[in-house]
Length: 164
Image (cartoon, one colour):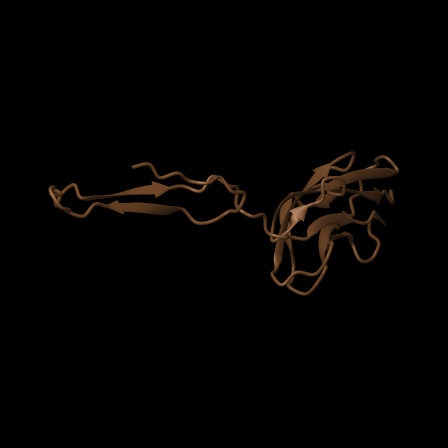
């Protein structure tokens, strides 16, 4: 006996096929070998959830010592979602130096269900060093849960203007 499967494009749970033979006229079937079961594995990719894209929006600039003392960027979803989205990011130095010009490294921002935006804050330090008039840093989205990072809109630049 041959049992064939059909390759469809639908993602579905794995299954099984069972076949049994019954005794008939003129023959008998061994109870130990009268049936068999074969597992059938689905070979289709799981459906990709329809997640919103997350982009990093904004160019931020601040002078050292100026209120409010931080650069603010926004993680913005392409549409509101029924689930919270967690977006991880990294603050990367340009001319600005971590721990001297700003505080930060790796962190995350939550975009709550029903909302489309969350704020990323990079605290700026007022130092007394003589330095370039403007120093830059970059914020890069690195990972997202509940959203997909937009390929061309995942980096933003911040500028710290020296006051010395």
